[in-house]
Amino acid sequence: MIPWFVKLSGKIVLSRLPVSGLAWQRLHLFRAGVMDNEESARKIFFQHLNSVGLTDLHGKTILELGPGNGLLSGKFANELGAEKTWLIDAFPLAEPATFPNTVYRSEGLKSLKEIPSGSVDYLFSNAVLEHIRLKEFPELIFETRRILKPDGLCSHQIDFRDHLGGALNNLRFSEQRWESDFMSSSGFYTNRIPWSRMCQIIAGEGFAITTIKRDVWPALPTPQRAMAEPYQEMNAQDLLTWGCHVVLRKALPRR
Image: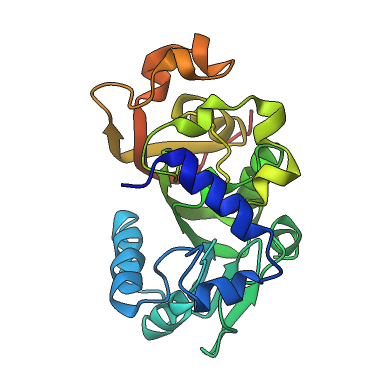
């Protein structure tokens, strides 16, 4: 096992090399998910689809937030008759889409804002929400609600672990340091929003939340005394959730 601080240092060094995100994927480094593997991508796609009770996408517009290194959701959506599939990411990490009715955009919030209001039937993400920049998170939730149809649905799988070894070592850093462009561009960024706070933001932007599954540690994997403020003083119960799967629906009115 490689210690978390060695992984962090290594990623900082490697991320400073003049190599594109797409090139890192080809080298099998800084892997952005498993959506380039058809078996894994199909399993993830249908897990999310089943969670909202959809089996037929004929005439529907769907959106995957953060497809990462593969655009196979476009293929699966076409197989189910989708009218259009949007694949929106913050960086170009995948080869261009070649599936019909599939649009790939990689400018983050800017790309999301270009999608017409009330045009999307179904939206999903898999281990993505924790990677949205802290300052952009409320706006991203607002935009996902804006583009949804009145009866639209979202399915989100969220991983709150540190992505350095499956603990909470990312909470050791002050917000000023962690949110710096230097750290966020080093290949391991997570916004560190605990689930209780994330629920508040999501609900505040006008969503009703249904929890499909919540994974909880029996005890914190990283000593709370080693964490920076405000995590050091936070109720430990707010930090014990390491993963969850939720379905979102529009709730009226927005708060």
